[in-house]
Length: 196
Image (cartoon, rainbow, N blue to C red; front, side):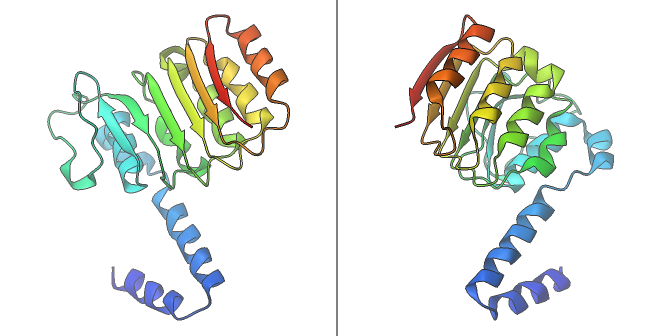
């Protein structure tokens, strides 16, 4: 901990660009996957810890309220609390941490809003996980500047996706074709688009 404080103090003395590099490095540390932790506490608990550490919120199956405080995560027997929804608004989640999602089986809703590290590879990784292909029904991708048509098209693998909201995605160049490809692959999909 002393080392982290020392590094932080040193970084604060440098230029603004150095500060950005420091925060990028720290966010990468928050996204590091600890496979031993996943084995010890289970995928839902480990993913919850990762998401909250990065500033996201989770809602557990059977509970109405969102949990955003890392120190107030519910406790109980291993496997008792299953993630049903993820709200990653303004969080620092990035591709490096997406292995945390691998064992989740009950995620029905994912909100990616104003996530500066979300890119096509993240959507491709999320869409490639079999458990999530079956469970996700609702998804939002809003103000994620690194997402392009390629990342959105990858969402066609989420075979039970019923609602998709897309807004403020400057990297999406051919919105009409992208939406048509998604609707062709997922006939039940209701897409709401605000990509002007």
